[in-house]
Length: 254
Ligand code: CTP
Picture 1 (cartoon, rainbow, N blue to C red):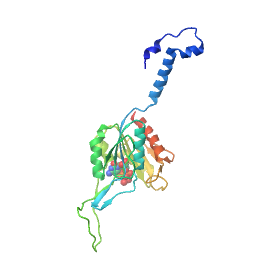
Picture 2 (picture 1 turned 120 degrees about the vertical axis):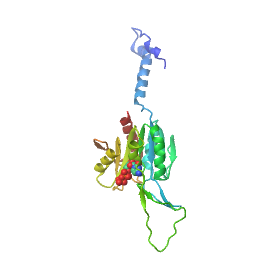
Picture 3 (picture 1 turned 90 degrees about the vertical axis):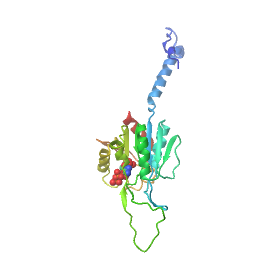
Picture 4 (picture 1 turned 135 degrees about the vertical axis):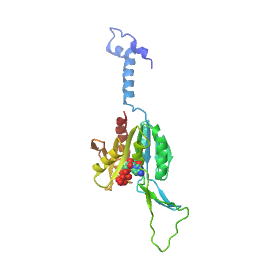
């Protein structure tokens, strides 16, 4: 764009149609539209997203997992990439197609996901931790298939690391931190506790007692829980909701 055009003098007595064609005015109009277009573009950011369940193996054929489909996290990754951001998706096992334009780091266990996030997170402006990470994993892993016998069988579980809680306190992440909360009761109170305890800028809270939204559904209805206020969003497809959420998170960052 040649900005020098903008300085051409406007001839004093041209008629309106002619005046509108004058290079100085055309360039001004173009500059104005271009500036307006650029102002509407989101600032390009590096966004880390976790998604899906984790799998905690007991032996070569058995594992503990949960009902997360990964749809919300993948929809967020797709929306963020479509808005021009640079996205890394760290995901547990799902049946979903990888959104285009997204870097991908597949993981299996909570431990793998913790390692992947802690080695990557400080390269990012925004971290959206949407994965349904197992809170406990079997204390021991049997390399041989566990054979059944006549006795009852019990498994001892140990706690996994809370990745979201460690983002600030251990990994020293300084960017915008967004988590999710899956709650079956006291949605707002429990989500706010998570928001404050895990030092998040925003918690996206899901009521998992409802069968029409959340886990494995293609729709979701969430409550946005900030440290000092809350805001409900209307029920929507996970794809539409993801675009809206990315815009909201962009505003938190800027
Ligand atoms: N989370 C995490 N690492 C874990 C457990 C949870 O990063 N080991 C993150 C999730 O990705 C989510 C948030 O913490 O962003 C809340 O997860 P949720 O399962 O709702 O809550 P928990 O903290 O695990 O607590 P509880 O299961 O008791 O509700």
